[in-house]
Image (cartoon, rainbow, N blue to C red; front, side):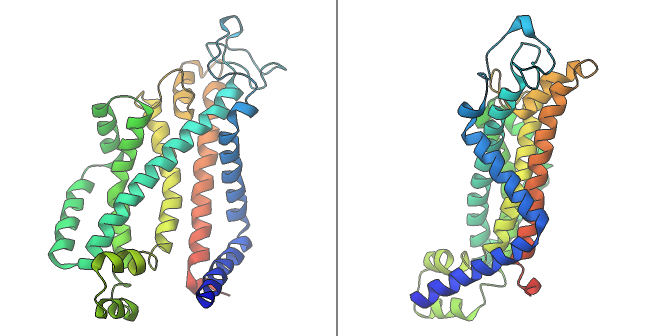
Length: 287
């Protein structure tokens, strides 16, 4: 037991050592952690309630009272950006967790059993993936009804096929390893082999895929809110804020620019960190 713990610790220590060498990945990780902290501490950091209307002070520029100005209803833009991080991250993390859980389950079954089980699941996923992801997401969100919860479900469902296929690809080279044959030789059940041996030894590339999928999910959530199928007023969400400000792009472009920049920075941070994590987990890059 002690020996296995040392090996596990040394492996992740080596990954962290290589990750620290990638300055872009470290900065991206810092940005992600900062956004998460801002989202968690939104009630403390926001100078005003995100839904507090001040019609007499609508469309004001930056001032001591409103550091980034106000929107068309006189609401503080900074406070809405801070609270908006909560909704955007909630959509991203929840959708990706749901999609990853279902995708890992399907991919593990297809990759481990192979044969007709693999063929059946893969052909079903072929049909599934014949529909463009964003079109499927919009359709599901429209059928379920406009809401934050339904947007999360729609995004998660549309991301399942990609996760399932990726997990299957990760499992194929692992299922023929000697320790899998040893587990099968002592009559270990298929469930135990999959959960205790197959998934833990093939999950590393999946972690990278999940990390990069977070940026995609945040972007998809903002897109749904932009067209009115995501977060509903008066909830503050970056995509909805971009949509609210599009009618004022000439006179008050900051109404859309600020939330648009938040989306861009968040998605870019997840993608760059995912790239760095992929390089750190790749054993061929050991020095």
